[in-house]
Image (cartoon, rainbow, N blue to C red; front, side, top):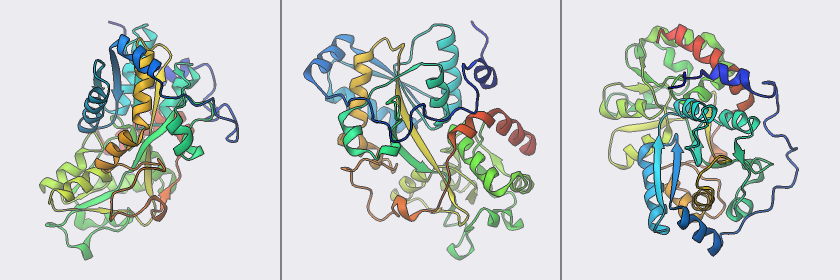
Length: 353
């Protein structure tokens, strides 16, 4: 079996410097021509009969997307390969370098991955009519190689049976209060691309000294961005320092005692992009799946799982603050790509894990 490549080795092998811009074309450049959902494409996809969907989305939504696609297009089997974004990245890198062309289409919670994959010329441009018609222009890569399929936030949260609303943290600074020592759960950037993105944004805006202080709080370190919400929903921990907001929303819908906090300093927004690999063994099925993901039906599934959609024709969940009402920290995928190994190493040293 080939040796597992580190992300640092992959980045060194890249054909361009880490200071490259996210897009090779200016933002105002015209998109590639949008593709229609034609009977010929559906027939070609059915002849291929399958698709490998690599996903950093949670398994429940990944499987829902796959099973709904199969019901919509009988005769095409959608196989889900789900893991954390950083592990998906490692796996795809190893497979591509070994000429194992297993992935057809990928969803990653770390947009920096698409910078690298595009630089390697591994991603094929493909713009669907729904993308061109219904997504904001800034949510589509100018060369059509990727687009934002959904988004969510990495948030503070708390268990309402263990913490009164008036006592709950309102900011990252509040989490440093001694009263939270031994009561905080948190994700790890070495596993989760979303937590890596959030760690970069917080360290940039608040300084690494924030994490040094937080590490003194006896934080329970977990892997994915979905685990902190589970811990506070079960009452194992009172507060989460980060983790996805959609899990908290779904838990709350189910009657679990949880609440979301959008930090006063700003909240990291997690952008989930999708793209088709040039090496796809089922390119027509991958294109059809891309059409499905950006259709109203596909986007509604994201809303049903409390994710955010930028699709103009999809209605958001009632009662939650719109994207425009949430103070967000600025995203910078280029910087995340360039600094990812340093971020993970520094974080691990601070927290000892």
